View 1 (tube, one colour):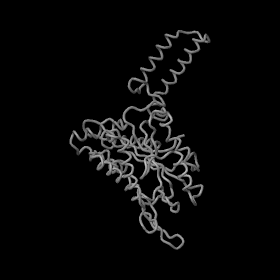
View 2 (cartoon, rainbow, N blue to C red):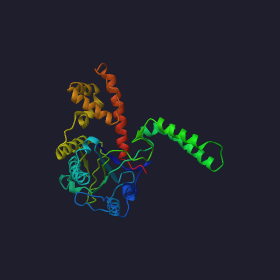
View 3 (spheres, rainbow, N blue to C red):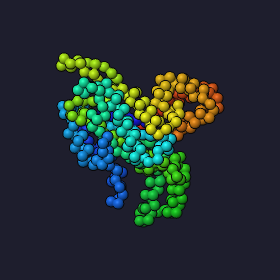
View 4 (cartoon, rainbow, N blue to C red):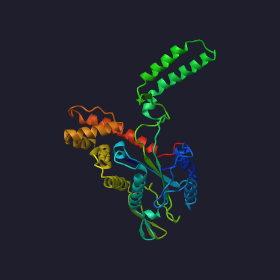
Length: 345
C-alpha cells in the first residue's frame, strides 16, 4: 500500500482553482460511451457528486488563505496487486475503506476546532476511484524501450514515403526490420512492446482524494503539510495546537485495511518495515533472513513484484550490499508513488 499526500502545484505556484485537477480525475469518464455508467465523486455521506460541485465547493472554501498557501491537497490510496486480490467489489469496498481512511486522517491532526479534536465531519473532501493506469514516458520500462520505439517510428515513416513514391526502398524488408525491433525491445506486456500511453495490465484500482485545506466551516486551516507532529503556539494571546502525524496516519490506514479485508500483511509490506529499511537496512535484512525459507521467499517475491529487481544470493554473504541495492530501488519506487499523487497535466 502506497499512500501519498501532496499539495497541488503547477510549476512554482499553487493552483487558484481545483478545476484542472478535477478535469484530470475525469479522464476515465471521458472515454466512456453514453451507455456506460460513469464514476462519480464521493465523500463521507454521498456517492453521486458531480465534478462541477467539487470545483465550486473546493474553490469557495479558501477564506483568508494567502497566494503562497496551498488551497487543497491530494491524497492517493494505491493498493498493491496483492492487496487488490482480496477485494471482491472494488467500487463499494474501496469507498468504504476510503471513508475509514479519512477518519484516521482526521484523528492524525494535533488540532482543535471549537475546543475539540478534529473529526471526519469537519473535513471537506471529495474522492474518486480510478480503475486503470497507463505507462508514462518517465517510466523506466518505457525509457529502456525508447531507442526501439524511435527506430520503429523512423522505419514506419520511411515505409509511408516509399508508398507515396518519395523514397526508394522495399516495404516488406522495412516491415521485417520493424518486427525485429519489436522482438528485440526489452520490455513487453502480453506480447506487445510497452510504450507511453499503454494501459498497465492487472488490477489497477486506486483512489484520488481532493482535500480542502480549510474545514467545512471555512474558518479553520487544517494542513497535513505541517512540519510538526504536535506542538502548541500562542497566537493573539491564545494557545493553538498544530501538527499532523503522518506516521500515525499511514499506520492506521494500513491496520484498517488489514482489519476490514482480513488481510495477512507480510513484513516487507508494512509501513513500519519500510521505515526500518530506510533508516537501519541491516536490521531490515536481519529480520528477513530470520524468517522461514518460505516466508523469506514470499518477501523477496513481493519486492520483485514491486519492481525491486535486486538479486538475492542463496546465503546472505554481504547483507550491506544487498540492503544498499534494495534501498536504492525502494527510494526510486517511493518517488514514482509520489508522482502518482501529483496532477501531471
